[in-house]
Image (cartoon, rainbow, N blue to C red; front, side, top):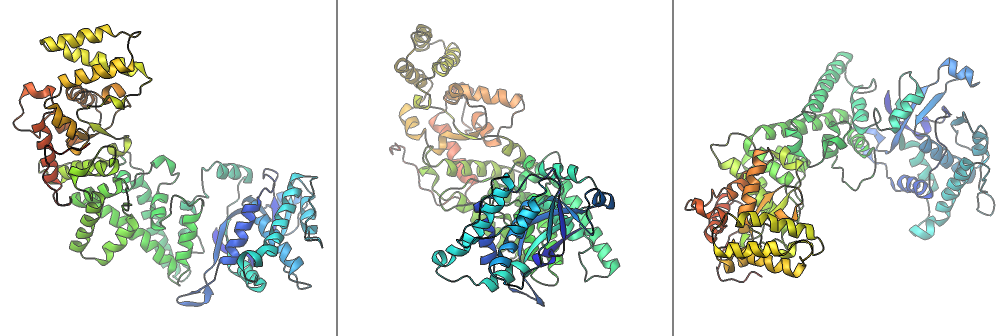
Length: 608
């Protein structure tokens, strides 16, 4: 059973803390944060339910009823609950009640709930006797570590009260604080069926089940307390439909090919114990900075509490969100454009898109208007003139343009029936690859093995040329063995060899760091290969392709020289000026709908 219970609904309860629970360890920061959260919360009326108000939701307390056998074993009488998870929160709540009773209530005390400990048997007595002294201190008892933390927590509560006016420049409204604490602060009461509490505790603390956001949300819809406004039959049908679609969503997100998962997110699937939690996080717009294990569940509870049909509306939102994603996923155009936006990198003021926002907007706009909005987001992701892009200065903008170039190629080509494989894309670590590398500065000046490997690779290529210049270069490579090679000698030889494999060196130098000399490639970090000339890289692309590596289609076409119809086989050794210009022009043509207006490139312009 899962339900929400106000603090004042715990007053008549008796809680048993079993031996497998660790002692109380909340820090000053955690106690103060709870006090601040309660103090800052303002209950508001719920539309359609004037007798109810919104509430502050604490994290779960997992409990199970003690059996008659267990109660007899521990000499307990009446109804008792074994605390499986949430002892720290429950103890902190007890201490706040203890403080309220001592300092604010006079003779009219609040009813306390009961805590009983299987080990550290004096803890209950110590807690009940703990108080603030007349000198505003709480006596620290270091006989047991638990006693010390109990004392420190009560001292923190009192100190928070003492400092309140000076820190906030206003008086603490104790009556309002008590009301918010008692009536409008609720715990997630998660009562489990009869089973071994120790085993459940271990599973919970290993993160392997039940108390995840997803399981709590599922229980919210499927528990006996859900949809009380419906008839028995209507409730049965409603919960059956929810359970069926819930399983469908989980199955879709778990598909082996990861195609759907990779379309909607850049996150790793293995980080989610229950995959539907990704969808729930998106709907509640959980930020990466939020360090709250139950944020998603509590946000959905808040949504549910807004009106009398809140629970149905929350489910309708989940169902609509999922169905919209499925529609986009099945549509080649939406799949590519939205998939690209999810995969694109952030820069400057461009922060990507939020899927929940897109789903909401899609409900209110016409199909044409929504399409225009998507195009606007894409333009924002590549909002710079292509000729101005430079490898060092604009890595994310270049990545976006090259990714969009590949994605658009799939959209525009009538001969490509499959969709762009975002799964393979996100399985790889991508680099912006110089199609023809010109700078030795990209090497580490302290690692000779990379220099020697580069020389060995290029020596093999030079041996294919029956030219005097090639033979001279081979002799120089042979001359510089392991002992004689220095950075100065290597960098000088690098320039000579690179010049041998470079047509029109001046224009190549001007354009080498620009878009017309860059492509997307994923491969192991290999300084010798990454800094190689065009032909070395072309052969490596062919090898990787044969071995089954994912090579983006446009990268493959670059190294196969598809973009230069005038290229001849003898030019494979060179990435010529004509190759570069044709590649750049076709890229602009394919991305014409999204790029800002471009100016003609001046061949004599100095880009350095």
